[in-house]
Length: 338
Picture 1 (cartoon, rainbow, N blue to C red):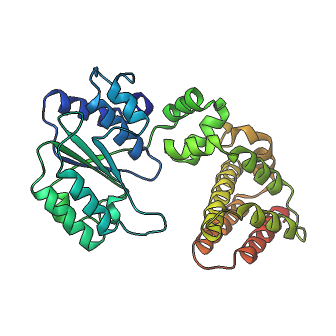
Picture 2 (cartoon, rainbow, N blue to C red):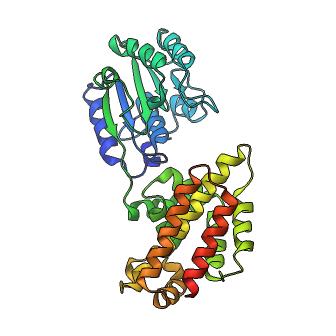
Picture 3 (cartoon, helix red, strand yellow):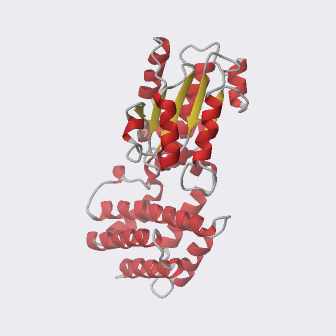
């Protein structure tokens, strides 16, 4: 994992290159950014850069250190996170970290410790972590990964440097998806909009059956008719079910369905109010977008978007999901046929 594998974060990469080059690397950093932005990828690339014996602007990828890191066998890189099913980072995880940080490095002159979900520390684990930040060992670097910094103790924030990882511009993310994940230009452009610049989420969707799922949703939408909405609703519910954590997975899948539908009807609204084709996200579905945009009034397109947003809010709660989908498909079918 090298800096080449972390698209769109040149500012943060340059910051750490300068810090390493001038010998002014601090003992602790918080890497902040939304889910899927690449915090884990960045932390691993930074660790490989630090440990690489042939590094220049990037790690070489072929020295002993690089090879061991790539295979998750480098003894001076330690990784911690929440246990599966846990909402918080338990104090036992931090205790393990405290034991490891007291030992000397085995391969190099330093050790790197990465703590994922560091904004999910419970009070006990936060206080234990603070003890290390107050007196950090000289041969250690701590990287805390977090979605936000609002849940950190002020005393922890004051002892760390914060580095924000930012969403990638759509065009840059699209180029990366085409080069690294074999997406077509249209797919890459769509994923850039859909994920709002998140390379992790975009790569995950590119590897799966997302575009087959989207194709089905678009075809279903165009064929909706009042009184015939039960079958599409049932199919949406069926496709969203499955997995070990069925309820959570179904909720996440339904939210993804709603995101796809919302982007589609935003394009329909854009055509309905007279905007051109060049602004559309669903450019590959231009004919369907144009057909609906010319048939629907702006008011009806807005009402469809309101129904989708209401469904999104309801599914995030404890609503009956099957009934919710039946109501949504009925409302959309009715508004499209008026």
